[in-house]
Length: 284
Image (cartoon, rainbow, N blue to C red; front, side, top):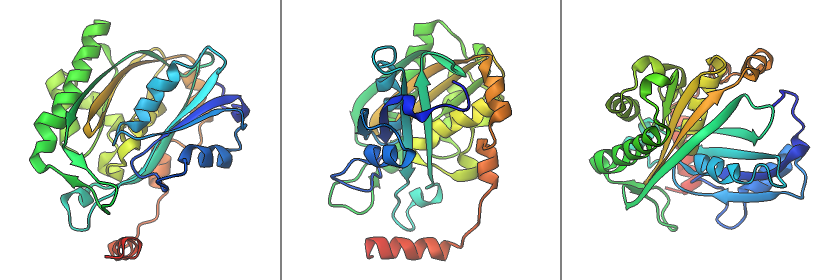
C-alpha cells in the first residue's frame, strides 16, 4: 500500500502478546485509540506465547475482501524473565505491526500452514510473577518439532524448495535455534542474515519473527520470495510464504525508519537500572 496510507481505512486490529498490561482490558482498543483509528472496527487481543502476532496475520487475512479492505496485525511484548534465569540473557522488548490489504501491497501472502500440539515447554500461571520453562525440553520436542513440521508442511503444500527463496526468517528465542532449524530445512546462513535481529535486540517474543520480516523487507528486491516461520510455546508454529511486489522499491525509498536505523538509534542503560525496575514492579 502507499507510504502515505490513511489509517482511517483500517477496519480491524489484533494485538498479539503474552505481556498484555491488563488481565481484563484489551490492548487492541488502547492501540487503536493511540493511532486515532475509527471506532467502527473489530479489535481483538490474542495470546499464544511468541506466535500471537503471526496468528493475527492468519486470522485477519480471512477478513480482507469482505467489508474490511485493510486490517492491522501487531505483535508486541516486554519479554518476561526471572532475574538470573537463563531467559534473562536474551529477553527483549519490541513491537511490529503489518497493515494487510488486497491492493497496493509491497508483499503478498502466497500461502501459510500451522502446526500445534499440547507441549508444556514454557508457561506462567495467572498468579505467578515470572514464567517457568523446561530447559532442554524447550528444544527438540518443542521448538524444533513444531517449526520443522509447520515449515515442511508449507514447503510440500506449495511445492517450493529452500533454494526458491531469497530470504528466510524464523522465530529467534536465542542465536542457536533458528540457525539450526534453518540448516535442517536446507536454508543457508546468507538467507537468514538480514532478519537475524536476535543478536542485536534479543528475543521480543511475539514481535521476534515479525521484526525479522520487517528487517528483511527493508533490503529485499521486488519479485522475490521470503519464507517465515514463527513459534509459540505451548506449542505451535505458523509458516508463511511471501512474495514481494514492485511497490516495495517505492516503500524502501520513502521509509525513513528502517529496522536497522531504529536499532542504531538507541541509548545504552546500566543493568542495575533494569534490575531495580524489576524489583520495584514485582516487589521481590
